[in-house]
Image: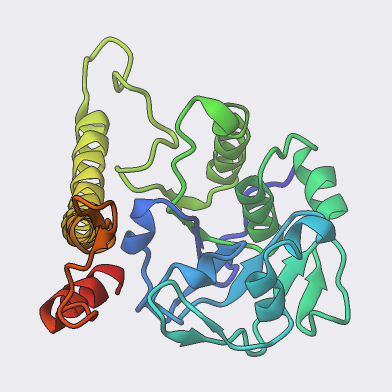
Length: 276
């Protein structure tokens, strides 16, 4: 196991950033901190001030995301907000480097597992291990919650294990209050402190309020479209009933309700609106 870093070692600050809401708290504008992102997070952050990308999955899985695959190949892509972003010469750490991804670098998986065991159940744990191998002195984790349950139930302990190792090596470790990492629902045993839980719930409420607002806008748009379609259907039904169903005369011949054999102009206009 690695020993505590030498006091004279140069300062190295790293912020590992994931996908959850606390990614906004990352020090994007601090040039003294290296920002390491994972997977296709480039698409979901507005800042271009990040230094490395990690995608620790099999190649077959990575290329399923065509935009991400093209991004790794050096092609400019669109972020979720529509702005352009390019990888440039920033390194991409993958299990196996390939020429199609010009800046790809083979991730030192064997070195990480040899030094910190193979209890590495997620990308964040492996990234922490890599930071420790490179002599990180200040390590922060943003946008990583790993709330218990589902996929993350088996991943969170590994991440906390690696953070504990980092702390034991003398690394300054920071996890925002909003993250579930290194937190328990009741705080310190026997104290009943719930500051972290309160902060987490407040963040969750704000996140849900944002999503509710977005869904409400979608509902309003759909209701407007529904009313327009309903009006069009009623107009079409009127034209069908009045102008396309012939009425029989007493002698059995259909009665022509049109003017000189033609449908009135106002009816034609209504029909055009109905099928528009």
